[in-house]
Length: 71
Image (tube, rainbow, N blue to C red; front, side, top):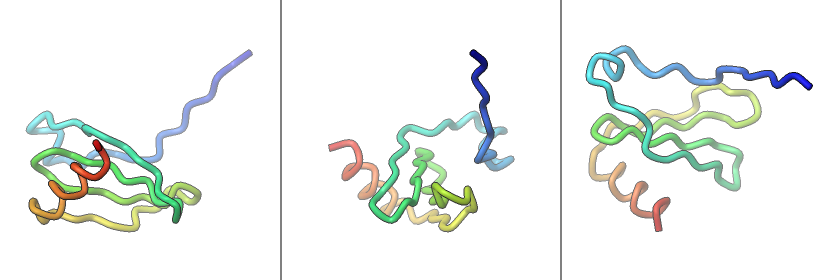
């Protein structure tokens, strides 16, 4: 049996330079996959189409989202 892997998200170049990696991933009730990059931002990707739907860099908002996801 073969397993096939498909890439659905490329980290931004700025992130590659600073070696920041996702801390959490969650799919919400609206099929949005939220990816938290500490110190960088929050990325929302449509879990069905894999299109980037949201990008939030507000650190306060990202911290609130991270605390909600982690609890």
